[in-house]
Image (cartoon, rainbow, N blue to C red; front, side, top):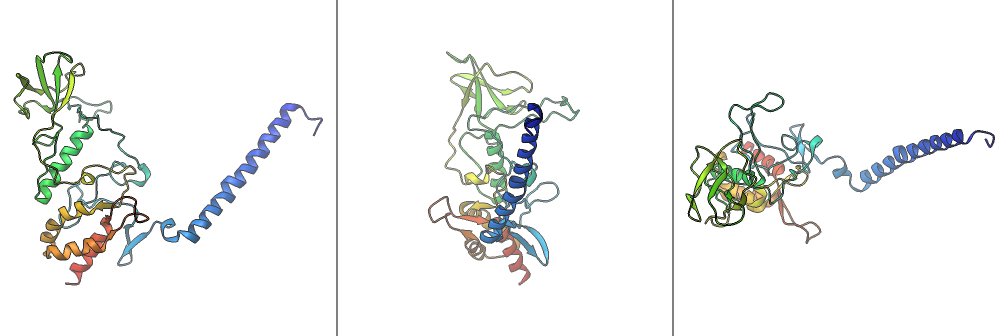
Length: 295
């Protein structure tokens, strides 16, 4: 071995390292981790799969949508929180939207324009408008007020671009309301507010979110924001309570009975002090189906 050139010795050492690391990290380590997981966390490690009539219908630890083929909420089911994972609860695309609280200005779609793939331009919604649109839709579905601070009545972010950026305003544009929509306020500091024109560049203006006079939201925060993973199987008790009257009406049940099922499917804080109580949506909906089937 000592007679081999140095470059060959280096390559042999590298090959040995690859073999050893492959065996340790690609074989022994995964087997040990899998064994420990199966021994200590058997149910979680296997996905906590839930079956109904012999058919797997989901997981207790991964959320799913309860919508029809067009994406509309099925009224007899409790709805999950929004998901930014792919088209919703896609385990191969688990992710957050990565949009922050300062993301308040939409990109309005330009009529007749197409993207690089030839599809119609759909623009993009800011995080604020997504929250506003979801709150409005939930309010209409569940018969509560979907109004929120910083949201317009038509469900977009109540945001102005004011010109010039510094000094006395001479122009104000409701940038999230595409013309010919009527701006959510008529004037800003004595200046008439314009509707937004798709394709126009408003970046030079000062961004001014307008809180408005909406009361405290009736729609809880988890109903309008996605989780960090996009796979959260739970909703808050507050969001479940908002949906209870609608589900009870659709199923012909007493609201008190539905709320009793909510309580049965509510878990407490993790370790007794972390987070908030949560309701598992799949388990709750399966309990409702079982109750209706037994009537």
